[in-house]
Length: 324
Picture 1: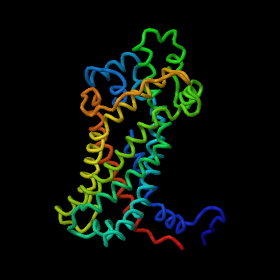
Picture 2 (picture 1 turned 30 degrees about the vertical axis):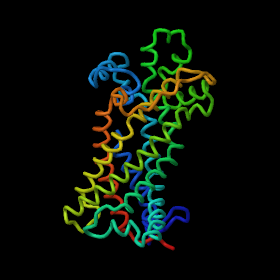
Picture 3 (picture 1 turned 90 degrees about the horizontal axis):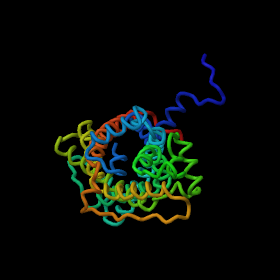
Picture 4 (picture 1 turned 135 degrees about the horizontal axis):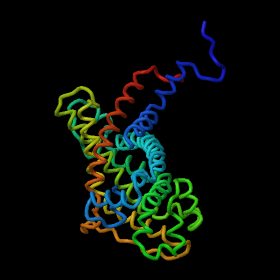
């Protein structure tokens, strides 16, 4: 007869727990699977992607391609898990509110076979996505700034001849993720980790709203054209995941470029020194430098992510209901 530990949960309890937190588990495991030189091309001028790769290898060697990877690995997993958790809860709340106003909840409409996107569903997904993006920006901003600093530290020195005598620029070189974060605090204080937060908040609020609206609406349309009874057929999920990555990046890339430029400039200044705030220019071609790489990467990552996310979510959802 098996002996159960009074501390460790039983198999049945673990299954119940997994189903209760299926969104968080599916999101975190899928992020680790899907996450593995667009930032450099945004922060500094290169002729093209190959030029960026050649310059990185010449000045930093193989390590340059992996510099700053710890921060995005940790941040992407954490941010996506929290983001999807907030989105899921917000989606049901907004759906209930819209349902009271128009007579039918958007989530009921979406799950009806053969349905197409409506104003109600678009508003529901967009509002839930924007809510998730805005709230998660508080967590993501320090991670992204640390990643940016680690990735362009060598370039900051290389592109400025006076960097040898500039203690701020030179202090960021050859540092890991945690050391980089400490260095930012040293020069700009604790709030220095939130340099460029306004740009970050704007990008994530708009971008995440577009991201989830595109994913949910595209998936709904593809399911209709496939005449599938399942709202999460593998093909529709994969295609919708890839498209939402492309569309969201194309829409918010100038905001991301302005954020990158501003944060790069902050890293070269001490606390209290003025930093020029760049303008967000949607009609300026230079603001789209590195877009092709980011879109291709985002398309592949989100195709893998959503395919894995929906797979694991469906698997976990088949477990027994949580104990009440």
